[in-house]
Amino acid sequence: MTNQNPPARIRDRSEIKAIGLLSGGLDSTLAAKLLLDQGLTVIGLNYSTGFCMNNFRRALDRPDQASHRVRNEALRAGSDLQFPVEIIDVADEYIGMVMNPKHGYGSRMNPCIDCRIFMLDKAKQYMKEVGGHFLFTGEVVAQRPMSQHRPTLRMIEKETDLDGLLLRPLSAQVLPETIPEKRGWVDRNGLLGIHGRGRKVQIALAEAYGIKEYPQPSGGCCHLTDETFSRRFRDRIAFLNGDQIKSEDLVLLKVGRHFRLDDGCKAILGRDEVENRFMAGFRNRYWTLEAVEAGSPVTLLEGKVTDPLVELAAAMTARYSSHRDREGVEILCRHPDGSERIVFSSPMAEMELERYRI
Image (cartoon, rainbow, N blue to C red):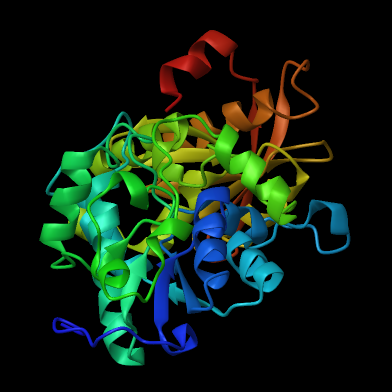
């Protein structure tokens, strides 16, 4: 590994490259700031895993309405503090880890420990490629219940073979001294000793540093911690062999209302104009249904479609259309090959809908 036998103290700290995992949240931004203030060269790494909520929000963005635009927080942090940030796409590889995490899941489908190991392994490879000296993160001891207690932090260092080369600037003073500190690359006295789940210290630091733009602390950006997404993901796994799931298959788990019609087919109904427009882009891949001459969801049928299932989805589409109070609603049903037919359907009752909801 890079720097197993690190050099003696370096007077010019700008020669030291610190590679950091950067979400753009408050903690990782502050960790980068502490090292920048000591004169180090900082490079941020941000991984596109396919599960980031903000990435998907950008896919649904309204380009004509600036107030709705969703930024990449890591790039924003790098721009604000004037250091480079690399965005690395790991989606296809990451999903394999999510499907079979060595250390299991949190309360939802979040494999937090395996996720941290995965990202640090990737960062270690990048550090070797660019001649970096050590890695850093914005982790705070005891802040997160699954991945940030002392024994877990230590275990992660061992599994990634980063013993001594992983610095956590926000909690450094309550953790063992690392190689960067021992060698004088970083002044330990300029690091912090934050411990626990509170964020008052970080918020006060942000104010002192003039850092005003950052996402809400503890807001989270991972779909895998979301109850609804996790439920849909488990359903997807249950009804499709895990090794067949690709990163592009995840996108529809993040949008619409989901209903399992049978073991081989489910319906996804758009909830608003933005989702409908997004889902309409899948017309060449899936059956789509819409109420005729009415405000209507775009409904996608994913899986093996039969005539009875089309009629079932038509009743759901009628229920969420603006004609839901009528006895019957005309529903236009399109096959992926472009052929069409009209189904006249009665809106499904709410209690019956709940039988199918995922």
